[in-house]
View 1: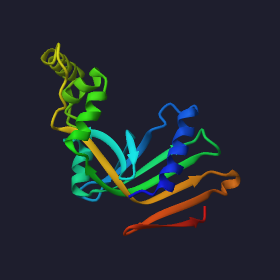
View 2: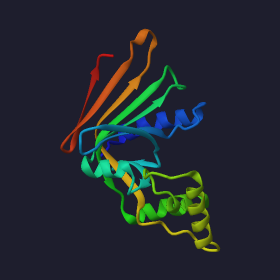
View 3: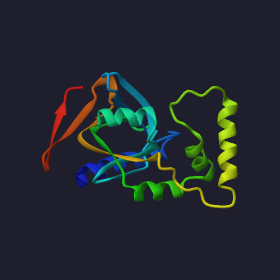
View 4: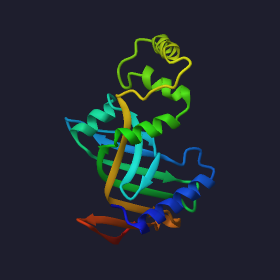
Length: 195
């Protein structure tokens, strides 16, 4: 469980990033490991954070979902270069699926085009040509015409429960400030690292 102090610090930095020139302040790099030990990374968007962890949503048949199933330990990294002297926040922890109710609620809040896209995209699978995808989009637009788009079973959320967090504050001459919080059972410890 994240402490109120950690949440307060992160939310304050996120608010600064949202007020800055950053076009995607909720963008975070998600690093995963496949069954062969190969590392993969991509950008996903933070949709919520609370004491239980950080939430993002995706296709459960995607490569990233298969990697999380093989190795639930993941790493997340935010990089806000437009605030202060640049800030990174790193989270490491275990990813688990959110409840269907949480996934349903978020899916219902998405724009209709994004909802259709969740049905049309066979995420990470080979696509023979763009027209095939556009035909699938048209198919599901027709199928759900005039009614709400339900959440597909293959789409939903993950929550990453961190056990290690680093706040990295940039400084001139590379004299950065690094603060690491580590979870030990039901308590957290904090320490400084050399830059």
